[in-house]
Image 1 (spheres, rainbow, N blue to C red):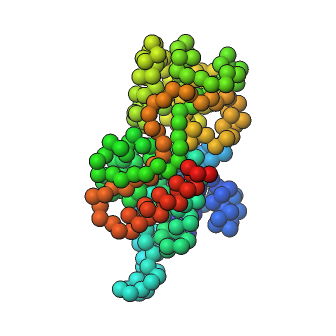
Image 2 (cartoon, rainbow, N blue to C red):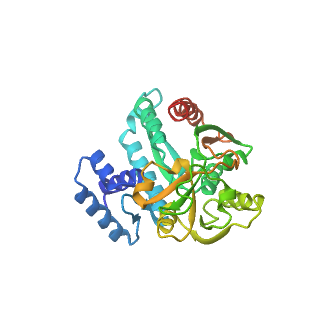
Image 3 (cartoon, one colour):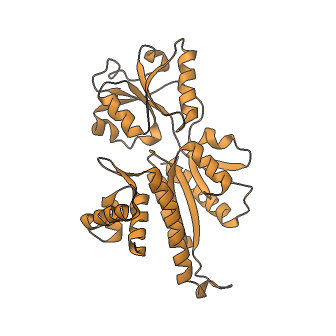
Amino acid sequence: MNLTTLMYFVQVATDGSLTKAAAKLFISQPTLSRHMKELETEIGAQLFIRQSHSLKLTADGIAFLKATTQVIQDVEQLKHFFDQQPGSSHKTHYLNIGYLDNFNLEKMYQCLDQISHTDNIQFSLFPDSPTNLSDGLVTGDYDLIFSLQPYTSAHSKFMSVPFLENHLQIALPMHHSLANKKNLSFSDLKDETFILLDRDKSPIIVDNVLNQGIKNGYNLKANYYVKSLSQGLAMTAMGNGLAFLYSAMNDGQLEQQYRIKIKNLADNIGNHDVVVAINTTRDNPLTTAIFQKISDVGIDRALRS
């Protein structure tokens, strides 16, 4: 194991793609793939789940990413040991950012990339569930998170601002009887079978959709619980049920990729926008300053574009 391979791993984990990471690292994709396979063999653990168009970290991969970024940060600090004395203008700052797994957060990358180039800051990015993001912000594992509004508003010590508009959608098989209807609501879904994310992944959304069924006079039939959005959409394509998703998960390619139809749901289930949040009990002027910059740039790019 060497530092170069570890840096390759962090880049792949951050981009979720061998193709994107290879381009940024200026090496070939086969070479990068070989490094990742050799790393997995060396540590004796699977780091990635290889999907059709992307890579997703396993639980071991997430743990290894946190440890690896700490090692790289320590090495970087050693490189600049003597120019990080008081009065030096070359000090690199490090922040851990948690963000929503399965969400299309290209605008987050744009904001962080702009900040890192102007403020000499290195960000380590960790995909996680909404519940774990809040827990990590409490414990200090994350300096700043991109999460769902209901999960941050429940914490009185969190400060958050809107970053990306987000609402509920429903995925249907291509030839479903409702597929050609322009607008759908929960009242249209009373006779359907559903596929939900495991409750430990996003308990608020599960509870909300179940409650919406009750409000419309029926008990929502969830016959399948899945670990990921991709698994749920694949099952929808096979006719196993309808899957809920958020609009911020939809990159515009999902219908074609899975051969499904995706419709907005008219029902108002509360504010589920993506927000950026920090923990106000942790006195870190740098984190507060970055939070403000992301707030300004993020709102401008996400909500006004």
